[in-house]
Length: 153
Image 1 (cartoon, rainbow, N blue to C red):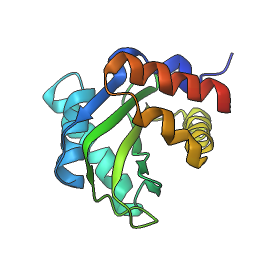
Image 2: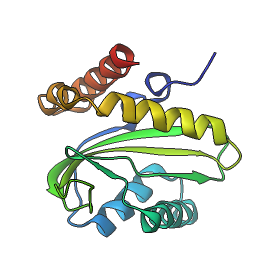
Image 3: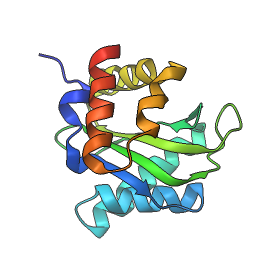
């Protein structure tokens, strides 16, 4: 059985009305939220920022997919719906208000690529964002995004 976004995204990994005033501050807050401790948060932040230096993960239409490999046993997916849009150097120049963050084990090349492909496939449809904009709490946002993952893949 392959690993899917819907199977990895738990309600606890969904963060509505998330705060961040800049790309840098947003990634810092994301790393602190995901990581178990301060050392892990620093390592995660380094991984996310290193990936961003290669090219922005802001893919357009208000969506960014920050991702990196880390010293973890299992892949992790978190969804962040931002309280206010943030400039993320996105490909279309538009600010971002939705982040789907992927953290995969260092050696999990195929899993990393498959999950990234799945996220891009789901969010490449302009209509994908619409149900998420109506979800303002953790449970409704989780249900909306899991339904989207299951329908589009």
